Amino acid sequence: MNPTAAETVFDVTVIGAGIVGSAIARVLSGYDLSVALVDGRDDVGEGTSKANTAILHTGFDAKPGTLESRMVHEGYHLLAAYATATGIPVEPTGAILVAWDQEQLDALPGLQTKAYDNGYPHTEIISADRVYQQVPHIGPGALGGLTVPGESTICTWTTNLALATDAVQRGTTLLLSRWVEKVSAATDQHGPLTVLHTGRGDIRARWVINAAGLGGDNLDRLFGHDRFHITPRRGELLVFDKQARPLVDKIVLPVPSTRGKGVLVSPTVYGNVMLGPTAEDLTDRTDTGTSEAGFAFLIGKGRQLCPPLLDEEVTATYAGLRAASDLADYLIELDAEQQYVVAGGIRSTGLTSGMAVAAYIEDLLRDSGKLQLTPRTDLPDPPRMPNIGEAFLRPYQDTERIATDPAYGTIVCFCERVTAGEIRDTFTTPIPPTTLEGLRRRTRAHNGRCQGFFCGAEVSELLDTRGGAATKAQA
Image 1 (cartoon, rainbow, N blue to C red):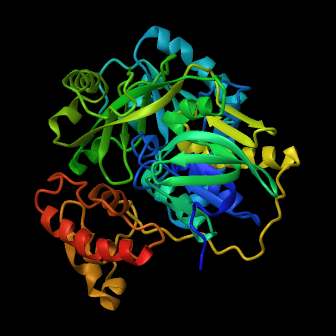
Image 2: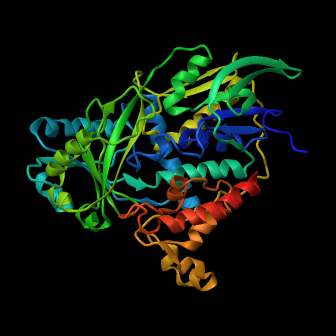
Image 3: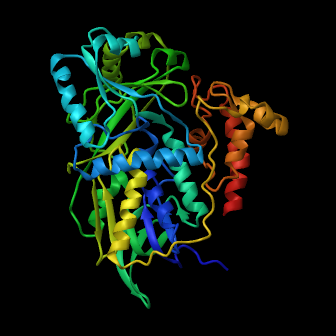
């Protein structure tokens, strides 16, 4: 009889199943360790990781010499290679920072120097004429620009799911819907351990890694620390219909400010165009609602950045919360006595840096001398993720695949061309969806212009029947 999670003492428990936490669990499950990945929500990637600008970032504008700069630079290469190995959709669009006034124009040489100092020497300052040659539909008045050819768009949903799936296939125990409410110290015959008290039972671990994102500072305090404080920063975005895609084939960035990268216009891997985000500091760490003021602000910015875009239909609106920290840098520290590691203040750049953060923590644990890291020789191959990117062959276009299995030619969601075969397949994966939102992130169903109005009943029925069966089978 297999022991339950409450009976098991895990060598390492990672709290937070976003991109950073999933990457950490994946790396550590490559060793002869028992690893648990814990999250308070009912799916992986339900927090900050699911709602961002989805850019694979070169790190050109990070503050040189910071840990964030190093992690983004290293993570850019690690994630690009991992995307190739697993099929995560990536489009190498490139980016242009556009200067709209003299002050911004004067800042471009400094940004180019910063990029060079961050290990990215490929930027170029260009004239206004060349800006309009590359992005002819932006608004009038641009004075010049800085090209960043290495910037790409990526599917953040598939990135998170790939890392978590890889971790589970390597043996990580995934424990969802378990909010950590209290922490206590304990010992057994093998030494000290930490007990994580959740509403669904206790979890015991030799080492705990805090990758809890928006809740990371609260969790850190449960371990007796007061090192950083998170302010949820809401970013609202507008998503325009696929017919708008010819207007923008590159990421158009403003010159960054102290509050972030500002409002951008960007293509997405799903074939849409995105405008945003806003940057509004809140106190409620669950408030992902959109607002009239946010939309008005974005429309005003869109009128300057790309006026023709406002003539196109808005397919969707959404908001995400970034873990804005009162520290100027990432906080990644190991406490050998508590056998506890914190990865805090990992902002939206965590999409790019997550795999590098995992490698950094791997090194901290090895250097501590308190956790034996014995590499496994029986690791499975990385998962091959289903493609939900528009620039690649989709199942409904794949005649050979349809000939083998007609379900891939049976379209259920017509807006996004999602087939019955794709939806069916999600329920046999290591981490099947349990909600419509989870199914949307895996297939794009409900992600189109009708937002599920046409396909909602059929998709819900498939979730209730196949999804319910998959949940029972896993249980």
